[in-house]
Image (tube, rainbow, N blue to C red; front, side):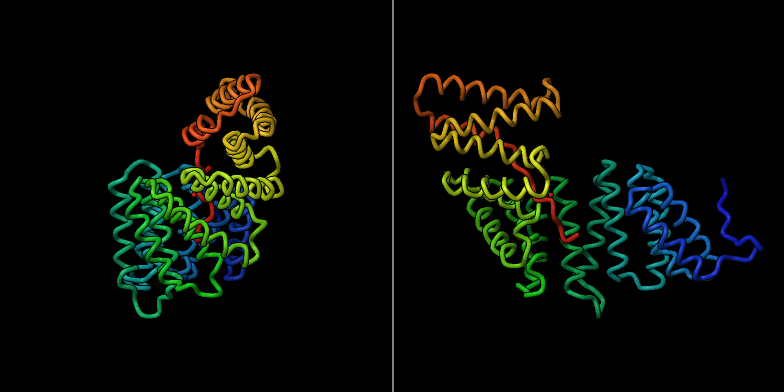
Length: 354
C-alpha cells in the first residue's frame, strides 16, 4: 500500500506534522511496535523530502535502517543506511563523526549477516575518521565510537584489537569525574576481554576498578553492577581466591534477585556459581540447597533435555553422593567449578552475555 504524505486537502504535510510523524515513529519503536514505527518514519522521511529537509531526512533514514535491521529486513536496511551515508558525506563532510556512525551501523549489519569482510571494511572506515576527526569533534563522541567498533571486533573473536580500542577510549575519558559510570562500563568490558584471554590478574584488576566506581556513583543496586560482581567472582575463582569469590557471588545474588527476580537466567547463573564455590569451601549442605533450586528452576524453564539442566543435575548428583560419604571434596569441587561455569560478559556498553 502506498503511503500518502499529504493532508486531506492535498497539500504537503507541514513541518509540524512531519515532526509529529517522526516523534510518533520513535515512540512506537521504543514500545517495540516496529511496524507502526516504520510506517510513521517512512511518511516523515517522504514529507521531509517534499519540504527540502535533506539533512533531516538522513537522520530519519538511519532510524528506518535500524528498524529494518531489527526486523531482519537486511537489504532494505542497507538501502536506508546508504541513503543516509550519501547525504551526510555531502552535508557534513567525509570525515564527520556522523559519517562514522553510519559506517558502524553498516558494519554491525554485515557482521550479523555473516559478511565479515564487509563488516571489517566498514569498521576500518569508521576508525580512520575517529583517528583523524574534524575540529570540533568531542572526545566523548570519539570514545563512544571506539567502544562500538570494539564490540563488533569482539563478536569476530578479534579480542586483541577489541581490547586496544577500549584502552584507547578509556584514556580519552582521563578519569573524568562526570563520566565514572561510563568509565566503569569500559573497564568492566576490558576485564571481560582479559578474562577471555586467560589474563585473570588483569581481569581482576579491571573488574575491581569498575566496581569501585560503580559503588561511588550510585549504581551499586543496578543489574549491571550485579553482573560485574559475578564477573569479578569468576576471576577470583580462576585465581583460587575462593573466599573472595563467595563474597562477590553472594552480593551479586542479592542485587540480581532484587533487579531481575530469582528466576531470571542471570540470577540462576550466579546461584550456580555460588553453589560451586560453597562446595569448594566445604559448605556442602548450602551448595546442595542452592543447586537443587537451580536444577528445579532450569527444568521448569528450559525442560529436562536442556544441556544446562543435564550438567547441573550431574553436579547435584555428585554432591548428594559425596554428602552421603561425609568427606571433604574441596579439590574436586574447585576443579568442577573452573570447568563447568559459563562466564557471563558484561551487558552494559557506552553504546556484553550471559
